[in-house]
Length: 427
Image 1 (tube, rainbow, N blue to C red):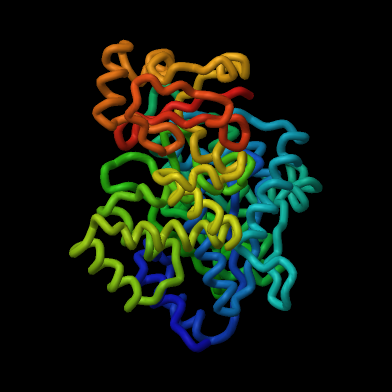
Image 2: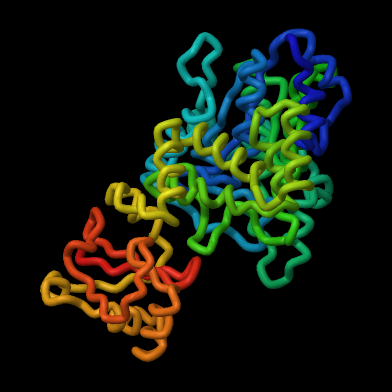
């Protein structure tokens, strides 16, 4: 291998814990097989999964063999790690639907068809034929309750008197440990990766491998930090909700804008986590954040890199065109889909074609949309130059909106000042 993957992960801040310092040497010797698990709680992964996804991608690009485990079995139980209360249990039909969506998301990050194709496996395939009695006899006997209670994911829930932890969730650790053992035996999988909240589950898997395969068996665990924002708010959430990988759940425009809004305090951390930029390029961007933060060069780089990876170059071009047009007369060049995405979060009002045909006074529109509190305030705002129709400044208080103002998709965009929008729509 031409690069030291371990040192690269370390330099990016991606390494949180490793079970043995021997992992670095092992990675340099020959390709190994590793896995990471993904819970099928939805039919799409979200950006909270970006770090493990991109870490798997880095391993695959470095020549290692990657397995993504979609937890069809463990998803029916629910991982208590990092959770304050028990998850709702999913039925088999919902799980099957979610697994198909997750596999599609994985294909955006991993090569599933090349000579070193990543494998996507469902752990239900090896749990389906395993009876409860067999599991207790062959697996459960290798774990003491004392040891399980000492794990952080369990201990934290036990201290929560309101919710506690069910026996179902308490057993989750054993299921994930068996995943690792099974993959070690059937695929020669030597490494499990995951977030730092998975440390207890990962080390349980190593313990089981050593118990069943002998203590000379070589296997490793690696965790990355949980992605947090500097201000303490949750990464992957916007005012509109979760930022998903699936464009049907989060539009490419919203996805791009989410990363464009990254705070200066977070952007270089995310550049290290989520891009392939080398150390020199990262330092140049760090310098731009220090010296010219208003240019937002690092944020734009982050948004461009991730939007291209997840949605493709054509979608990046479209959303950047939309971003530039939103503040200029070029808004008329945007298609209906892009306009809907760009103004999805703006308040809107439906109007009739008849009202436009009769001439809808702009003063009335401003009051009806609550952009101005009264007709007098609206006239004052218009004459002062603070009102825009489709990003064209209007300073005639007698101006009336007509059907000629309609954009693609039957929309008219009103704006007061720099950022206060309201959409009039005929559809």
